[in-house]
Image (cartoon, rainbow, N blue to C red):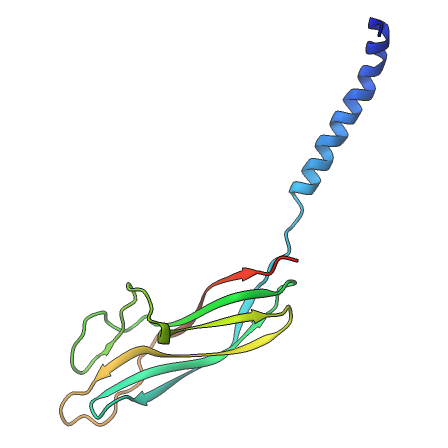
Length: 153
């Protein structure tokens, strides 16, 4: 090729490069579809475990309000007002340790727009003081969606 031919093609190559960069930017900035979960119902139930102990169980529903299906939804509960110290006459929960299997629920699949139930036990525990009948429910109980995965199509 002659030098003049290359100079004539330069604007064409420049245009192709600019268009390629523009298309790459559009593709990389594309909003990814993702699942979005909300807790639509939650209920905490006081259950007498033994003659001297009570525990709080949780149940409810989670809805997928996102635009894709989700899987492996891990849900658990916390008592934010409970102490981490074990003692008589107070609600106890250990927020800093890994949850035991009974303290979580895993929902295997929720389709976009779908709703599924969950339940788990032992959000908090209470050891009665001698002569005490039944403890009051603690404050600051909450259900938390710990994690989930988006189903790839």
